[in-house]
Image 1 (cartoon, rainbow, N blue to C red):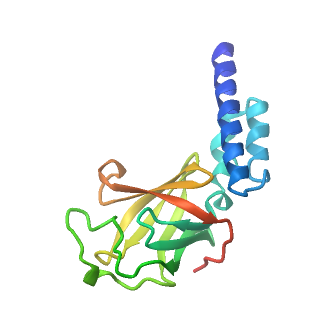
Image 2: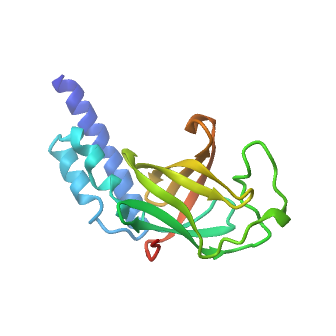
Image 3: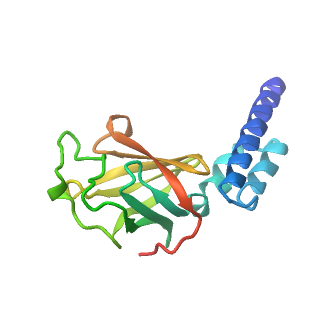
Amino acid sequence: MKKQMIVITTFATVLMSAWSAQAQQAGLSDYYLAPVEAEIQAGKLANLANSQANKPDAVAGTWLTQSGSLEVQIGNCGQSVCGKVSKVNDAANVSNMTAMGSTATPESAIPVLGKTIMEGFTPIGVATWSGTIFNRADGQTYACQMRMLSPTELEVTAYKDKPENGRSQVWTRVSNTVTAQK
């Protein structure tokens, strides 16, 4: 058991070093990472799920969708996390997260500037949240999971029944500034 803890602690320390380097490149302060790093150094890995990685601030900021068509500001909305469209980069470019099992045409694009498209996100695991997302391609709302891959990458998966059967995108952080609120 002691050997396993040493291996896990060493792995977690290496992981945090890589995460910290990416966070600094992205302009994030050590404020978000210091408590997690301290827990790892102390061997308190059981508390990792409740660390800074799951706080709304970890995912807060402006994110560019994989297609590049939208910028979404994600931030704290009361007891959960939500996201509002802050910029439409190409109104005719419909998101590649099209209706599950159908295709969309540019004419079916629904105006979304200023619209809250992500709602009710709460932590369900380490750096992972669950909520709902509006798909402008078909005007439907789907269950959704978002997971921080790094301080600058967010995986967003929309689905009907199970995340494994959904469609994923990787969004890129544009900035850490947050004004999204319900």
